Image 1 (tube, helix red, strand yellow):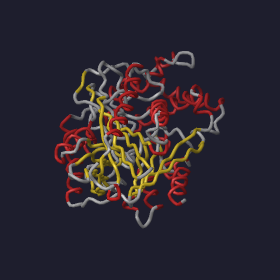
Image 2: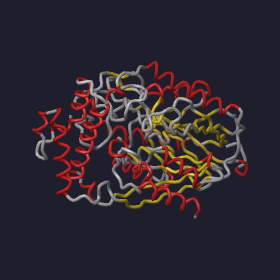
Image 3: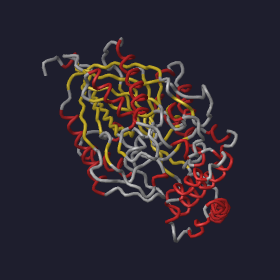
Image 4: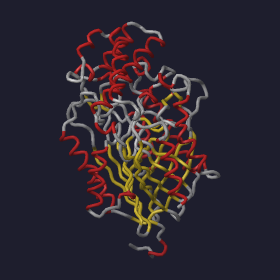
Length: 473
């Protein structure tokens, strides 16, 4: 190393691994695909790693072109990295882009075909990329910037100028001596759903296009995408359908993918263009785990059965064959979302009819989960992480965070709210993470994000308080 250690701001390294499924698999993100397998690969999926080290403190940032990071995979990766001495747990952040055209990753009541061999290879690929990035650290400098996206739509509000966080995050890491780009960590809050459930080709969706664009334009080895508060946000190419309505997620083309991905990539490149490199003067990390109650924690088993019966009657009006379903025969439950969605299209249901049916389907699935999956009947541990990089402040949450949660995080970081971000889909998976105010909205019981929420309504408020305490301590 030719430079004097005293003149080194920090060290950085990056690496990637190909995690594209090599055989047909169940695809994640859309219950309408139940029983179908992927038909090929349109574009590859990657794990990408950025390692940043300042003195004795290290950050290993891992991004994946996947729907989510299941708790089991997160735990295996973290335990291995800690055991091998690469990092402490609070120094590791693993995220997913939330592409709906990748393999099914969730442990839920949908029959999925994802071979154990894929999960095992995924873990090994992540660990190998982490080791490679850690082995090639070089003195580096950093650029931090924000831009604006103009392609976001709030699917929950379904109106022009609905609440979105249009900020684009852009962090550029380059070699301190040669000024050659190493990596760009960037993000925006938006569902990766330019492609609908009729697409059966594996794809990273628009985040993949954006990553490729940034790598080509800036000449960096890796562009790493993080999804921010995307829980109720979709790309404008999707239209203004109700979140429960299958017709809103039909169609979509790779032209749409290119349009949204290129727009994001151009904004990242543009906002970094006039930013000067700077030393990394502040890197601070924290993590806390706390218990919250599961959704419907006050519902007894008897009342859960009653709720199931009530919603089952609504389902039977449209799907009489569903009478075969019970707690000893869950096969019809596995395909319920698919079968009900097909009836919505077949009967060309009005929104009122559709909403009545699909909210009944959602509630039925939630009640079955509560009765059969033990983790939904007791307090659930949730981890929140804080990452401070110079004057940018991040908190991470293990699920799909709604915009309102991110707005409160900004408010709690006044007067520096423009540089306060929530990174969602990080360090595990807890489903949707609404703000307490979302449960008080009109018709909240008919809105997908609040029906399918796995945690008590106050869960994100508790997480925000924990994160605020960490950065102030």
